[in-house]
Each structure stands twice: as C-alpha cells, then as structure tokens.
Image (cartoon, rainbow, N blue to C red; front, side):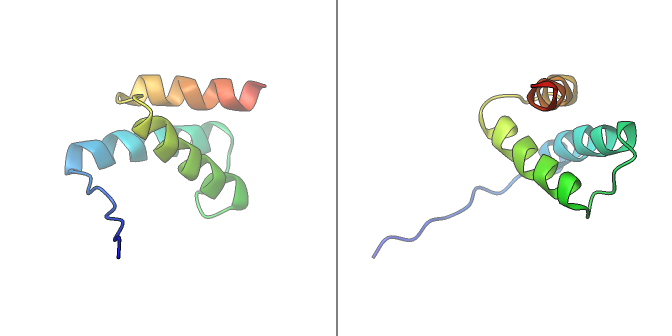
Amino acid sequence: MSIFVQPVLDTDEVDVLAGALYAWCAERSTKLKSQAGLAAASKAIDLYNAGYRSQDRLLSALHEMHAH
C-alpha cells in the first residue's frame, strides 16, 4: 500500500503564496472564495511547486497565465 504525503509548507512559503494570491485577487476585485479566486489559488500552488518561489515571480506568472 502506497501513501501519498503532501509536503508541508513553512510560514515563509505560505506568506509568499498568500501575498501573491491576495494581490492577484485585489487587482481583479475578486474574492478569494469565488470560483476565480479558488482557481487562481490552485494555479498559484502549482506554479510555486514548479519553482516560482518569490511573490513577484509568482504574481507575474499568474498574470501571464490569465493574459493568454
């Protein structure tokens, strides 16, 4: 039996993700708990795991994803 363990983020990592996500939502006047906000949160986590580890890089990547 294989058990998948989700990696735990430390406080600084959560701050990076939250900061980028809150900025993205504020720019679009979107609530975090809206469908668009939750979709952005999911994408932000994927981007973070792909190596976008600063708030600025993460926010820029979210902008690029939504520009296309």
